[in-house]
Every structure is written in structure tokens, then in C-alpha cells.
Image (tube, rainbow, N blue to C red; front, side, top):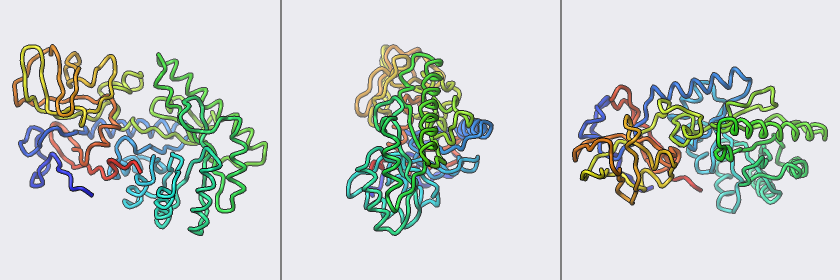
Length: 376
């Protein structure tokens, strides 16, 4: 693996001020007090409503943060790719669901290697994927649990509801696989135009899965897992709906995209990018972070992000290494440091080898992100 430079100098002793010259920019800061509050709030919701909490690690991509979630009652974690699962398993986090259909020889061989450490729960939305899993399980002399992924409206992956029963039979008839239940992701909640719209998506998510669970049980299937719920829809799901687990991810850090969807407050956003002003004139301020750090994800209300404490001071232009704030509410001096709130924090974290846990303006923890850029 390429040895990537990190913003905080190796010789820096913790705690150290975020204004220290030993901390270079751009650097991603994580407010640990906000993180702990976010983790606790979601864990309390899951416990109070009778559902298991299985956070998706796509947001933080860090075993250190996953351990915080597990310490607050999460039953395990969810990952997107086999390589992410390998990172977690190497850190002794082994209760894993890989919520992505695993296709292709290289990825299935990677899965076989993972099976030497742990047996993750897998998902499938086609018989072709089921056949790949059966081959790996047979060659590994093990039995793997498979959830059928259902398309409840996002139209990205997932089998149509009227094809679920047939696919469940395909899983159950495979000698080395066991049918574990149902899984869905209602990511189309981001398209809702108000909070009531998000609640409607969540209710439809639960309705479809509830009807499918009844159909499967009538056909003689046990359905131990019914997994649903993103950061947006999880707060509307409960055991009374037939849901057994929720899989929010962004909630640990939150971002302005989540705020724009009425699912977090700005003071619940834990991540910021510490950047340095490198150029100014009366009409604009330019900082040392562009789309290679802050990404091109944009919200109409917030642009590419805004300055912490100055919500009217928005990033309106990004090039590769520059971020520009046009007509700023104040003009900081060259060399001054400011903090930018993220639009889509999950993409931010995928670009960072290391982030920095802060409390009261002090870096108190290096947060390693070993699953960054793990798309295989």
C-alpha cells in the first residue's frame, strides 16, 4: 500500500491544539463529543423500539469508530465491499453483513480468503449471485447465510417483491447456503420533499418487507432477519413493523446533506475540514482544499459546504486543489484557518488515511481509516 502523508506530524504529542503548526491542512476533524451523542441517541432508539442496530461503516471506514458503536450496543456492522469486511475482520470485528451482491472471480476469491477469519452474512438479488456464493461456500467447506435484497423503491439493486419467493427457494435449495431473511435500502428517501415524505418512504419500506415476510412464512420459510433503515428512515422503523434490525451509517458524523433532509441539526454534524486561506481579494476567499478533498457533492442551499459559524459563507466553486468562497461575509487573512462543514461526509472519509478526534479545540486522538479507498 502507498505510504500516504498525514496532516498531523508524527512527532506531535497529544493533546495538541488544532491551531498547532504540527497539524497541516487540509485535515478532517471529528468532534468526539458530538460523535458520542449521535451514537448514544441512535443506540437508545434501537433499544427502545426493539430492533437490533447494525451500523454501516461506509461513513467512517474505521475500526476505531466501529468499536465505539459496538460498545454502545450495536450487534455488528454492515459493510459495502469484501475489502472493507477484511479490514474490519482483521481488527477482530467479525459480526459482518456485506450488503452488496458479490460478483466476479476476483471478488469471490477475496470472499473465500475472508472465510478463513469469519463467516459474514451475504446478500443476493439474483440466482447468478446465489450460484457464486454456493461455489465459494462449497470450496470452503462451510455454510453461509444469505439475505435476499429487495427493491423497495430505490431501483438500484434488489429483486422485485414479486420475485422474492423464487429467489428464497434458490437460496434454500443450495446445499451450502441458508436463507437468513430480507434486506433493503430505501435510499430514495433522499428525494423526499419534506419530512413527511421521508416517513412515507419508511412506512412503505416496512409495508413491503412485512408483506414479504408473511408470504415467506406462509410458504414454510423462517425469516429471522428483516433488515432496513438508513439514517433517514431508521427513526420511523420499529419491531412492531416486523423490522428486526436497522443499518444507519451517516448518523455517526452527519453532514449538511442529512441536515437538508431534516434528519439532523447542524450542531449534530461532527466532521469539519480544517483548511487554510491561501488567497483573498474583496470578492472572494480561496482555501487549500478542492474537489480532491471536499468532493463535488453539492446542495442548493449550502453549495459545496459552508464555514463553521458563518452559514452565509459558502463554498461556491471547487477546482482540484482550491475551494473558493465568493462574496464572503467576512474576509479572513491569508494564513488564517477556517473549518468547512461537509455536504456528503461518507465521500470525505473515503479520501482520508487519518482523521483527528477533537475536544475543546484540542486534537486528542488519531483516527486511523484503514478502509479508505476500499472499493473492491
